[in-house]
Length: 265
Image 1: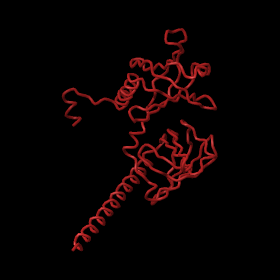
Image 2 (image 1 turned 135 degrees about the vertical axis):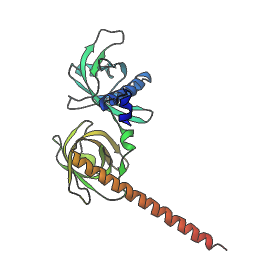
Image 3 (image 1 turned 45 degrees about the vertical axis):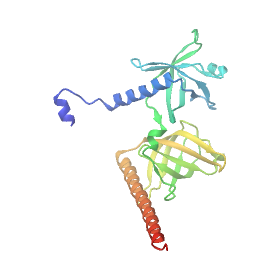
Image 4 (image 1 turned 120 degrees about the vertical axis):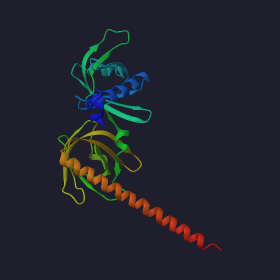
């Protein structure tokens, strides 16, 4: 197909350009709809959330502009070179990304403005959710997480996709994972294969007070081609196992309904 198009002078766009256009579309929508944003300062040990809005997008220079942070006293902690971790939600689509402050405008009609770099990538939870496979409902798979910020910790794998995974921590009192934390080494003991090791990055954290469980979503950051094939093969096997279970349940249900119908007077 691509050879056919190339004969007429139509070239396929590089993947980086396609991703950039998609990210620009999301940011333009968030800008137009004035989506509230939660911002953390990555270079601070304690990372409270501050509120802000997107003010401008410059595609040619690949820069963004953010409104001043709220509460206002937080703006004094921002300097050129500070890194923002940005979280937002657009019509049920959770997204987050990181940017660096390039310039600060203080004498403007709109108050303080922060001009930042364009994010290298934007992580959207809905994209991963569309391709992830639940693991906890089938079997318990142990994952060991080694981080430079925290002691080693073991947990159970909740779900997995080609780009990331989610774990459930039953006793989160000693868990201090934060958004953006790098996980130096994650060892996943996949069945019928060797232990899979990779590095990852924390993308979202959700705590359930009722059952005292914390769910931590992570994105793979360093996966070799061989390891990616192991992940994909495991996901495909899980999907087939899920389908067999669903078809078996449907078959048993239909069989029982037929038997009950035949026994009716």
